[in-house]
Length: 229
Image 1 (cartoon, one colour):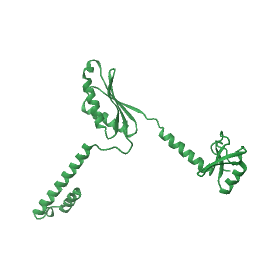
Image 2 (cartoon, helix red, strand yellow; image 1 turned 45 degrees about the horizontal axis):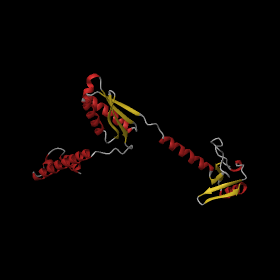
Image 3 (tube, helix red, strand yellow; image 1 turned 30 degrees about the horizontal axis):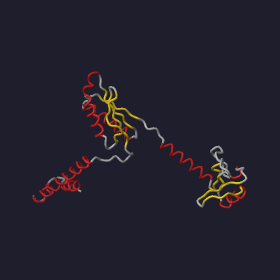
Image 4 (cartoon, one colour; image 1 turned 60 degrees about the vertical axis):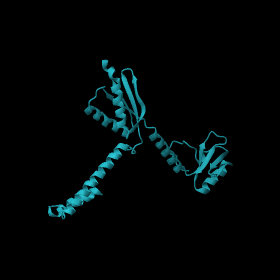
């Protein structure tokens, strides 16, 4: 019998007091006298582990007890990790937030979402600034659009008292998706750079190898070719 390092959470081998037990496995189940089940365990080089003591008769498995405890511990750890509390981070705006302040808060929101936290952004209307509620809504919609690679909208802007709220929930970690607009821009930049390199190389060839006549010409030409690739 292996030592139980979890405070006798399970009865094992001779600890099982029932006269008979139900053995379950991949091949189904069968009811056997406990003594016979213990003999089977010894023959197979494993343990008789009682996994459901309140059943009639108690349900047991023929398994390596130390491996069984390891698997139980691993499963409990995985469940705990999945149950990590998700925090809600707040981002506050005024109805007339300037561009610098907006970008500063946008940066923090990206970090919060990348860390797996939700973001609750809101515009606070003080006094007569409630007249600019449409402006606040536009700001929050822009905020959501700028964060589309990092989070998705859980709740569209809604006015509650003097505050207009927007809720964002993070996308899966490591899969921040580029927007179509950003992908198109990067493609256009790459094509433009490649075209410049091709033109420079063509001009050099037409002029009899202009880069060969300047210091470091080979390096310049190699760099242009590298950029094109």
